[in-house]
Image 1 (spheres, rainbow, N blue to C red):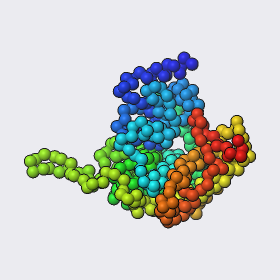
Image 2: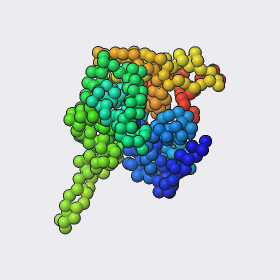
Image 3: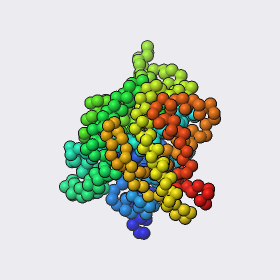
Image 4: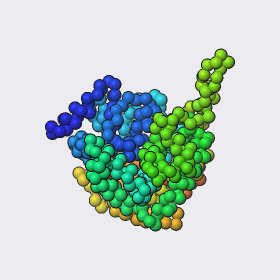
Length: 414
């Protein structure tokens, strides 16, 4: 108990008014990057706290209940965990500039791409990080520096071996192996090509300003694919515009936009060129850019069947195992097969996919008849698109309680 108070005092050592929040995480974490990019975009004061072994054991585990990042610590020393929950919490308290679309299709597509980014892009980021021995020295140094920042390089490399082995073993549960690896690589390269076409026309996914999907996508790309040696080379040589977008989202580059240009006036002063009305907002009239269509098609066709299977398996699990007073769900329900191109493999069945998915279906279900019709017309262009937004998740709804996932019991089981 003394240790947690000591760590708490240390975390609070900075002037609370100056920093307001602390973000506990690491450069290797895509979900930490997602939140960090959001905080920087909103100009919300915060202090980055590296999730060292000490912070994990003496603060995160006692306060959150398990070892996970990111964690946001408020000035009142309250903690919020999970990137989506953190951003939702902050958006209510810091609404300007808003990242929340106000129109139906924009809301839907923002949530849909956040789902795909957070839950499906785990495949390429984990494959590229853990399947290539060329990454070994970089990853050992990174893990060692984060976990044991006060150790020497030689000491860090020694203890980082354990962390490296642990994370590398996660490939199996994700369905990453020699059979699926080439298909994962091909899919990512095609996605990079599609994003290049989009970002050549728009600075963000839905037009002139970012939504939560931008932060989710950029977090996955930057923390793994941009920074890691093998995937970083692929991204920077095949899709340099996407690489630059990642740096822009991290605050390292100015916004990549044809409107972010300066000129010299007649009196010799440098001023920013005036941009057209609405250029710094979401696309007008609830328009979804056609340059997003190939990206949505890819995500829906690849991840849609996995979601449908997960729904069925979760319903079965809830019916067999969940009852009042015992609603906590395991992180993995077993395995099912997935397909990517001509490759296939077993992978874990993750209930958390449904927690993210129901945010999408909730948006669709809250629409009026006309907005539903337009959304269906759009999603019908993509394999499994309408299935995803129209799915009935009432029998497998989940909720987060005290940072753990629980089933929401159907009324007939209460």
